[in-house]
Image 1 (cartoon, rainbow, N blue to C red):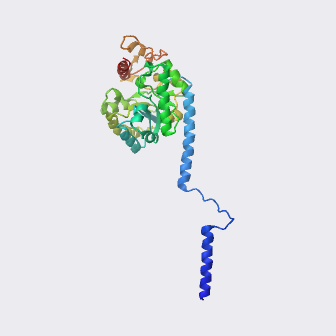
Image 2: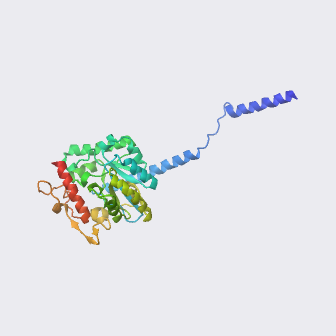
Image 3: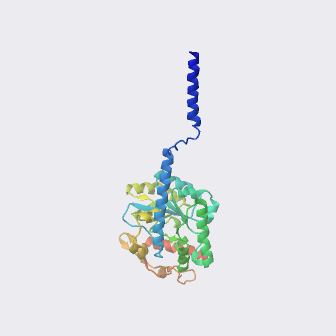
Length: 334
């Protein structure tokens, strides 16, 4: 009996050795991927496909050689955008966006990236990170070599920090001219402006910011805000739920332009191609940069005439904002 027990124990140990160590010369079948890894691989594949689609649409729009003010009106998407970061309030903006499960686009300043390291990857998780020059300077006051530096240095810094290729940019103070446009296009950067201005940059408080944004909150809208202003962060507490109430969602600008791009007619019309623009209590107000805004010397600036001398239909609020930005430019340039 004892001999039988020892024999049974020996057989059991031999079987365990085969299972644990494997039989020499035999290859075990590869283990199937875990569910978590399978989901991660699938997500990465979808992400690569989406990025390729977005890039193709941006390249198509770049061919028009004109700024983009809004997306199309056919879907349920808008694009919240934040300029001038990162900064002291960036953490709070990201926290509110994440809680609401909304996405945004961050037009960052290279110098601010130096001052607030580590934020770009966090911003990228919630949308897109794009170019707003290196020192937030009025580019029309610079020679071509410095314009190139301002755009290229920021794009390179973003790519170094995030691994993402930069395709969009936004001019500080909304000021650009044919020289700036040509250099940006040579760098492969599409100029993205906006059709819904929060006016936080000229001192609007949180209640005014909410009112200004909600007035233009419609499918395809590109909303301009600044992540370095406490009043804007406070306004997000109301604005983010307002999206759901209106059955809208905020996406990154690249996603908006890919899923619901502006039509060629919209692009050619500029700001006037965005629906409802220019309506204040039902009355449109037409203001021309060339006729209403002058430099500190009293001469009309070619840059402020937009180079193409296009008349733009703007609301009276946008005209006031343009005048304030022009005065800011004068102080920078003089």
